Amino acid sequence: MSRDLSLSSVTARTAITPAVWGTTYIVATEFLPDGQPMLAACVRALPVGLAFVLWSRRLPTGSWWWRAALLGMLNIGAFFALLFVAAFRLPGGVAATAGAIQPLVAAGIAAVILGEVFTRRTAIAGTAGVAGVAMLVLGPDAALDPVGVAAAVGGTLSMAMGVVLTKHWGRPVDLVTFTGWQLSAGGLMLFPVVLIVEGLPTSVTASNVAGFAWLAVVGTGMAYANWFAGIQRLPVNIISFLGLLSPLVATLAGWAVLDQTLSMVQLVGAALVLTAVIAPQMGSPRDADTPRRGSAGPEACGPRPTQRNSRDFFAVTGPGETPETLCRTGPDVVPGALDDINSATSSRRLRGSRRPLAASPETPPLPPSRRWSSG
Image: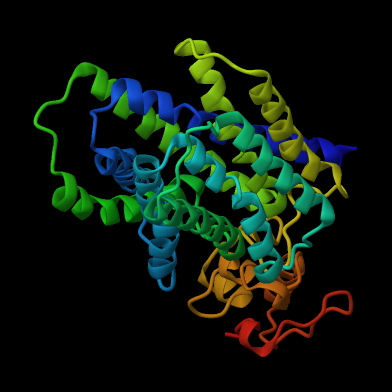
């Protein structure tokens, strides 16, 4: 019962993010300058990303330089750019319907990379989600543009791969820093595009500032931090379906704020979308805090051992390693083993012995590349 409650609470909190993203359309059309989508994308990501990095004062190290850049491109830079190209070249309904295939794509990639099971329930929920979004937003005058369709599909693939890799690689630092890395990388990729393609605006009104502030602070900074936290704790075949809430909220916002009407077909579509979001959660319960194989994050090995001095540190980890990097090495490290190792190391220090310790019978030995130093 507690497992179900944990999963439900994390899912409900993570669902706030796509609901906030659903306000993007109404904010963009009512508050932002016309004809500058790349500027809107860049302003959403770069300022708040740099602010997060300056606040944390931490930069990537080692392989996380290219990982953060790649995740920033997939989740932010390429996704935002392709999203706006699709929005300008396709009717909104066509772009949203193309984006609705993302849960199916993400679940398929997760099956290959993370070993998550692609179930019949996932396939049915994904199909229902695409149909529901189409009924919500697809009008009879919808036309297809090859470039727009390619951009919509590309954006969908980019976001799906970004979600899976974010879960696969884990989070090496705190949430604010991790979000700041990706937003900064994506924003820096978009900035030269803004200068070359659109240029900077000649004038900015108070309503423009308000719109940019909402999209940057709430719709991007806070929303993406919450999203990345959810990715670490939820299976991909649950979190990817939450994205279907964005077109649902956008439609309801148009009805509530812009006096748009809702037809019976749209109401049925809304019901299908909600069914698609809820259905994947009705499978076998899984604790939201339990990581899947190959998707280790800082939480994977439980409480981190407390290090008191440099000898303690290198007794548990090899030179250049940290408890976090050991946790992220995947199936080679047994969750909870670090606690046993740290306890045994402390006992050895009290006895004054410097002999390497044998692995306990309850804990499988670590591979040679992960054994602790004896000095």
